[in-house]
Every structure is written in structure tokens, then in C-alpha cells.
Length: 139
Image (cartoon, rainbow, N blue to C red; front, side):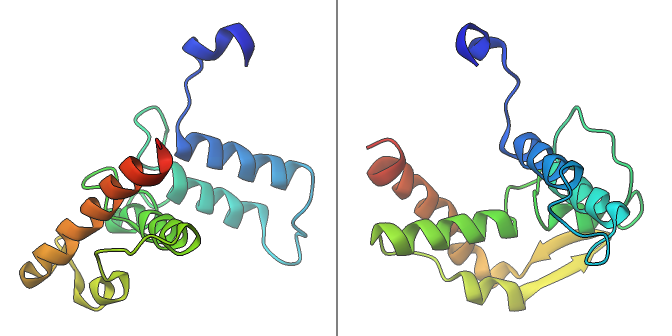
């Protein structure tokens, strides 16, 4: 990146999409295992929250685009995954219960919604993230 680092338009979702493209283009995934179209659908789910990305699939059922990268409220399975993983490997106690959130999720009016009684557990997701930033990521 060198001198162009300041102008480099980087996002986790954009880089994940590029990585997936590279995996597809270099044929590390056999077409017998997963089709190129299915890989493009996966990229759509990953990059759907990026403002500069043009959605190709899942134009209906908008809630599907909130599962992996939720640009509406940032509560998504990617966050569950990296917070649980980072807490485990860094020896930090997570203050939220990721397994408890999922049974209380419903789709209402094409939007992923959470049961009101889970507000404190959801708050703890963001508290855990803030704690990891203070204690691990920027330590």
C-alpha cells in the first residue's frame, strides 16, 4: 500500500469480498463443490452493507442481507464469531451470551428483530467489543 495507504478505501467487508473473488479466480474452490454463482451470492451477503456495493442477489428478503454484515444495527453473525473467538484466544471473559441471542431472533416486516427482554444481552455484545478494543486490539 505504501504512500497510497491514506487514500485506500478499506473495509472489512470489501476485503472479504476481494479475498473470496481471489479464491474463486485462482480456482481454490472446485465448481463441483460450490458454483461460481453461489460464491457471488456469498459475496453479496458479505458486502451488502457497503454503501458503494451494488446488490446483485437478495433484492427481496432484505433480512437475509442483515445476517452476515448488518449495516443497520451491527448485530450480525460475523461479530458473534470474531468476539467469541477473540475472547477465547485472548483469555478475556465475554460479558454476553452469544448462544442465548439466536433463539430470540425473529424476522418481522423483512427485518431481523430481537426480543425486548434480550436488551441487556445485546448491550453486552457491544460492551464486550468495547472491552476487547481497550484491552486487546489497541493495547
